[in-house]
Length: 324
Image 1: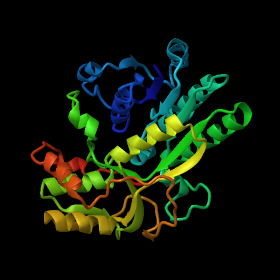
Image 2: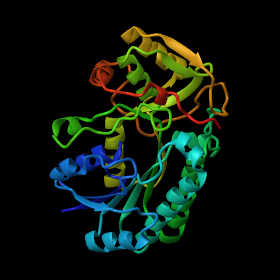
Image 3: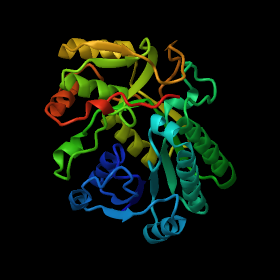
Image 4: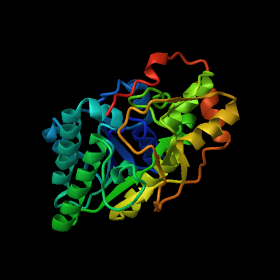
């Protein structure tokens, strides 16, 4: 039986990915420090995964023990602080967590046949909409650029096989497997720190709140559905592709996205000050190496919005992004 080691395997992308590999017959080892909460671990362990609870940045010895004990065929690296707004609130933690954690992993891959798949972000290219080298838009994105340099260096010197996947905004909540299996719901963030713009709009629509657009809304962003993101992680891991890849299915401006949701659910749109230091308008001159099957303006979006109706929420958290 092949083995996959999923770092950050309890998170928004990590948990559906864990179930995907499990459904494909893999032995699944999940490492997570549960920094975002307990994720109802007892329910999730019914899925016949092996769960190791520690922080890969702070405990390289425990990470080495896992490598020695399980000899993984693939590593899926999702164990990074994942929010651009939060990274601007605690810059030192973001750099220490992301950079040291990534290097701890790469150090263990030397001399093995284990490949690594890492989730990056299209934000590494900056907010001017051009794919002309890295130009990070936040501390979070800066660390993704530094990750890429480490992957390339370890590939050059020790032939480490890596797939660095720079994704667009991941939208959605559940996947077919998280819905099918009774192991607890996936995580969903609607706030201004961890929530994506799509998920925020869906949550606002479900609660008949105005869709809040920062600035003019004329900034273009790339999007990919969670189900497609998980499938890409599996495909790149099993196909052992080496390199840096862009993953997105469609491109919308924020205002166009708001218009789609506003018309579909009959909610208003509100324009507020943009807390980010970025261009007020841009296009995206990008090419995708992996296009998903799911599109935003579809019945699937209805299932997301309907599932969010009636959930308790704190209105003050919806637009609480820090300024930078």
